[in-house]
Image (cartoon, rainbow, N blue to C red; front, side, top):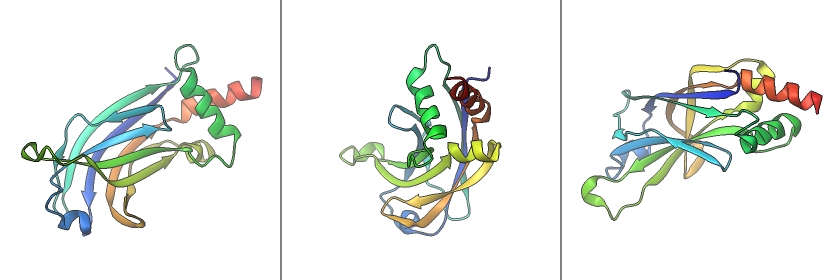
Length: 168
């Protein structure tokens, strides 16, 4: 039961930005990535919300990090806890523009990034529950283009990994 990270992508709201103004951006989905070996995405792409509105994905997924079957994930979690300077200590959420059916020559385009630090969850000993996190513009990392509401329950898994580090 303990050896899991639960992730829920609840909803997305956009602030006034190049994204809301861009008419080629119509449908959005969200990808969640753990380092470089695991990516999950919302099965639906939803119509881009207007300013002040939210679109609701209510998408949940679970990353297993048990010793037996998920060694790479577990080693990565260990490295987060053991290497204070590791830059990739976050789950990365990417808001992606899904081209409309009749525009198949257009590529999916990453329009924004949001992050939840697993290291911080461990340091604060607190999961992230239905929290609004900033979505930063993929073309300008200082510009916030919206808020993504997410849940990341990782504390038990991180505690378990930490115990194991102490015993190694």
